[in-house]
Length: 544
Ligand code: ADP
Image 1 (cartoon, rainbow, N blue to C red):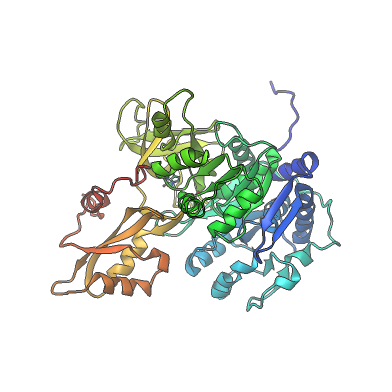
Image 2 (cartoon, rainbow, N blue to C red):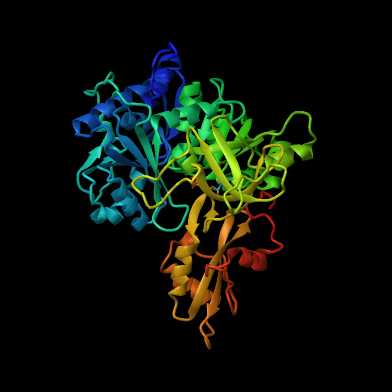
């Protein structure tokens, strides 16, 4: 027998409509790309999002079409999350830090028809425009006076497009909650980036969960500041969670200068801010140097990498700010587990819990499996591969039938290794995927190895992650010299600097006579880590 409840779809547009109707006067404050501060309300945001949907309709965009978006966090980009998805089209959030090849690959794979970009991101498209196979034009998220000179063709000014002639009431499309809404490529593993296609339903449900006290716990009295860019897993749900909660939103733009971020946190009475540990370490440094505090900030959400224990302790003891440590992936719509210590435990015991990756919030499940794929019991102190499933966890990658996302039991293969204790808290200990995460961004060890092995004096190269105080992890190159060669580390680094981005360059180079291999002939990274990182504790354990 069916229940007799109304059949309302979980759509993204319902979130901004709600915020506009119920919290219409709540502010959205942005630092623009030009540097000025812009203020308006959720009502204004909804109005402009409706107009943008109408403008896209005028441009011939249809439900299901992909529209690329490359922008730092500010109000115009926020509007596109609603305007694009409100038309039933799909917003492909592009990471502007990707190289031209990866960028072109993802845009072509997604078959983006238009690119929405802020002025700061235009140069990356100028660099790869001739390789883009489906792009018909570029919508620049600026006022007309701030559109820069560009070699791109068919450039449209966003503000002109949604100018007063637009329709504030343009009706949202009739989308089904299972329809695609946003597409985010993960470059976390080797090979081509893989697309994670969120549905309307997954975005709404993960934002609901985000606002629950066991996750971040947000309400209309809060002010949220996502320092994490929206191109990382839908900005960890903030573009939907903040309006859903009626919380004031503070968007920092592209300027990651600590003084600028600090000015916004204190000046706008931010209560909850989200960023990777690298940002929080720099902020700590900034406050120590300037003798300042964090004003009304009560809670920091950190994820993407393991935060150092000392950092969590210092924020709590010196600044009275609680750190909620979260684990998640692009494939799990970002934050999925959150660490919160129970009541009544000692300071040290609480810290012991905060360094863990925490427990899943309702709607997502995790388990750890052994080599045979069998779940490892929680009371057994043995690590295994982490798997996840839930309302907002990917089932497949977009248009990639040869790249399964889930195991034979339907659980997402995360590539993370860890333990789940009897208390239910996840403790990550290692990573099975061959990548390095530096300051929240991925570096492919395989790509670096290939580049190094291209050096005429190098026979074989292996790259592993080493713990780093500021960037969490940095690449470290281990190489075997060709017989008779006396090539130096500096020469190898100079060779690499012409082939990879500067921030990919290994911290150091060590030479060895032989690189260990596993039974299947792969480089044995575990053995290398034991050999070269032994004593430097802390890889993904939060102990550094
Ligand atoms: P995001 O863009 O949110 O960083 P990615 O999909 O790029 O998401 O990265 C997810 C990966 O980052 C995880 O599989 C894990 O390896 C790492 N990671 C995320 N959160 C944590 C955490 N709290 N502690 C340790 N590693 C983490």
